[in-house]
Amino acid sequence: MKKAVGLKYDRSKNSAPKVIASAKGKMAEKIIELAKKNDIPIKEDSDLVELLSKIEINKEVPPNLYKAVAEVFSWLYKLTGEKIS
Image 1 (cartoon, helix red, strand yellow):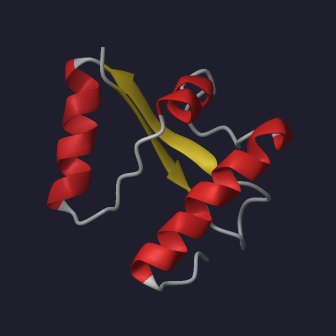
Image 2 (cartoon, rainbow, N blue to C red; image 1 turned 90 degrees about the horizontal axis):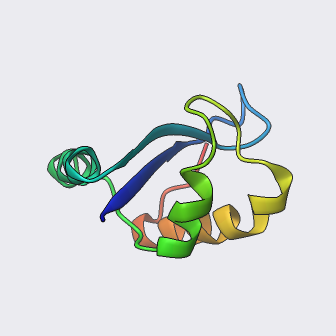
């Protein structure tokens, strides 16, 4: 079954990225579809999605996942050339 998790990071408001969306099945497909329509990059990492999907919506990523999430943001920076704020 397809799963999707959306992250948001605002350094001025949060000390870590927050989970802003999490779903499986048809809702996960809708999250992915919306991301594609809005030119939001998608990184497929089923292991990380599995871990992030256990975090409540609007909760920050816990310290034990910082390294894995930092790798995603690094990938995003390389892909877009935009600094994550």
